Image 1 (cartoon, rainbow, N blue to C red):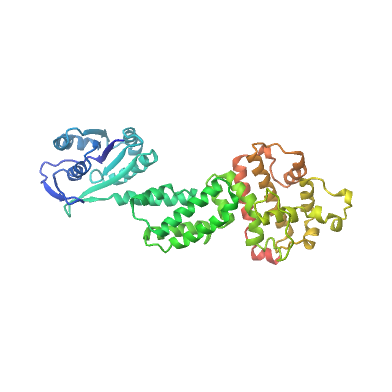
Image 2: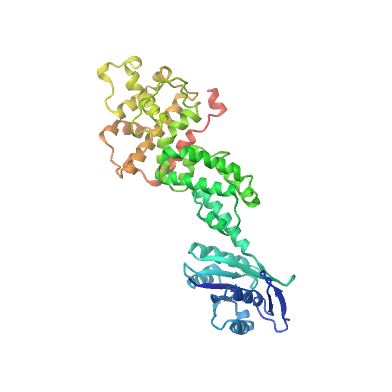
Length: 441
């Protein structure tokens, strides 16, 4: 690991007067050229700095380069000053930034001196800092000289704020709290923020490892942590959290979580959460879609069911044609469907007839409910296809997949990642509450 300073070398005016500057640690340093005092401070406080990367314009090369090298050599003869030419007509991102990145290794630590250069130099240095962070190089401090107060001031908090905002973006987009944890190792945290980071970490671990039975309690903990964090003492965190609320609603629910997975390109996890959590969502959170009255007999729980609601959805709802076909569909005993796919198709076809005599009721039009069920069955097939790395339809699936294909769902062997993404998002749209117009119908 090596420590290096990066700066824009300022021009040197021969008529400039040497001034004293008070440093953050109380020391006094002197300087004539703009970069001089902050560099002296950094070299004194961090004696293990070995190199200064100087972004140098032709004008600064002529007026300041020799003076700056001489100044550094008088303080620390072992420190290398490396010039990085920056002709003014050239593109900083295309020609200068790659040279800077080539001078840093992933384990290095960078100190920014932000006083010198053009007015845009601070933005260019922030660009360097972000690019270095992406490359695994840590920016540990930023300083500048304030000529009005004669102080060398620490601007590291600005780098930290970019980390905080980037960390919130990672949390919102990917559920990742790594950058936020790095930020709060440097800056003071609070119990409310720690609770938020821990709950987000545990929730995302459950999703990543497809531990569907742990998702709901951890989702509840995460929602509670968000609510608590909105009252924390950190004003910027309080200001950033409403953006999360705006994207995912007042409380993150199962559909929101699935959408989050899709937007984070975690398609396998999205399929798993949809398959294992949507039955519970329908029967507990959305009785307008599928209502089960109290006292309804419990279904047989098999090993592969993660919840009572999933068992009820499979054993009582999807198997209605098998359980009730003889009485309500005009079938004789010998005509009963023989496979899971067969009786599921029969349930879909006879839904209007079967549902009024079942354990279930709905406020939704039968066609809309049928689409919701077809979405679920297709997503279940996609999930099994990915989990088993096999896109060939089994004999027991054939009739169901033929039925779904006739209604616009792609064959499994034709499906691409973008098809899965669209299928899930469209299915989530179908779960939206009925509009007033739809309710009147």
